[in-house]
Length: 238
Image 1 (cartoon, one colour):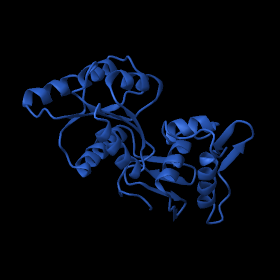
Image 2 (image 1 turned 90 degrees about the horizontal axis):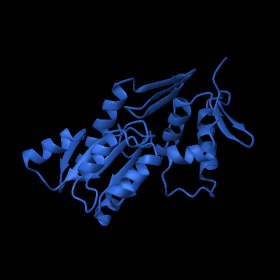
Image 3 (image 1 turned 90 degrees about the vertical axis):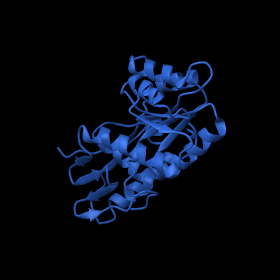
């Protein structure tokens, strides 16, 4: 597999929230290199606005911010003031006192990471939280002869393992999670890419095209069809 990290759970959309713009952007760049779709918010109010309209799997949330701080953001999310499904929350803070960690967890955080931290530890914490989410149901997606293991970042069609890029893996995961449904380009951009994706480019068409070629490289029939004027659909057997 062609990935930055062998067990990264891709096909996930993350939101990094920190008023330190340089740090937030650096975290986002690192996570994008690992195959995640990542948005950035530079304050609590902006974070709540984005969570209200986008479905995130996980938030990297700084506690100490002016205005609406991270604890208040966490409380509002857990109170149901945002879009479902409920995201995992990893608190990021310079406060390392026990009472601060307990307070953050009591507010609804799933984990807590003290600044300064090494990026590999942040990445590992995120993978752990996303595996926790996957284990509540299953890390395996299966549609006819397609099998996708989100925990180990591997995919097969029949007995043939697929060599997918991180973005192709994320795209296939979304298709399989929505098998039989017509998915528009806008839906794919929202769930597989991030807010920086240009809706007027052909990035979706190109990535769908490379994924299709890899899915049929062993002579198998095409399983992703184009629905003219509407988008794409992963075909399910009758």
